[in-house]
Length: 325
Ligand SMILES: [Zn+2]
Image 1: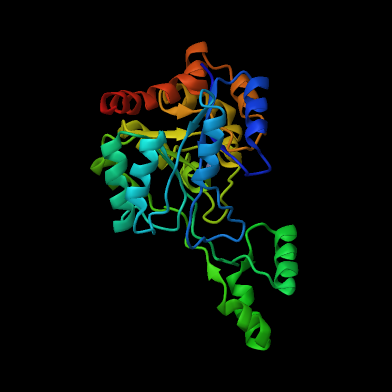
Image 2: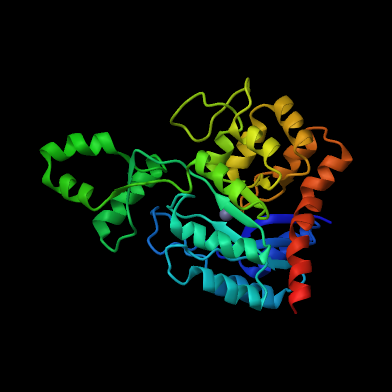
């Protein structure tokens, strides 16, 4: 039983057939396929990954794809949309990646439905940024500017630099007005802790740069991908230890980096939390499995992370769905 518990379609040029080829080549039984839906998206590299595409892939390969959908909580109908798609076969609320906070009323309305349906929730945490972000634009000049930003630093233009330049240059001032400081995705750990208490029956599965940054207590405030040995464990260890309904997936560069920076720490971490961690790639095929294999984990720990945990997390939803039908 091997499962990639974090994948997307049409993200990083992956088609449904590419997914099946990847699963076959790597002997995965199935994958969790997730959406990304934000009405007012907060990053210029936002990609709308819609539920219709996930569902179409699931219809083509129903035994290989576990379809998931996280409607944007900003949409009034989000809770009903989740219920409607659940009735068509959606088996998780994922990936929740929105510029809202856990305490938002809109998020609470969605969490109540997730709790009622007994489905898991995968969420992405990412920090607030001092850099100015741009919305996608049709302007050639803006596209060129964005390309320059992208080539230089993926995260945008420092707000301070724009503030200084805008004193001397009207066009920078105008540009700055139309651009936002990225407010972060679900970035508050204190509120996360409160929803972990409030919804004990939801399996919350965390990932993302901010989540994995806190595998250790902070060393540098600004950089999301920290490096070097881990002296002191961080909030993520505390929360995983204290909340039975918190899990994590090791996908994407953020999960990889958190485990690769200190192998001795990673071995201890993976062993202690082997019943709470899920293998996933997020379409970043950078060798997550190779890394796990290099750490000398027990057969049992490795097996749990590579699929057994994902299967167990889905079990309550499966039982509930069968009983309802
Ligand atoms: Zn993702």
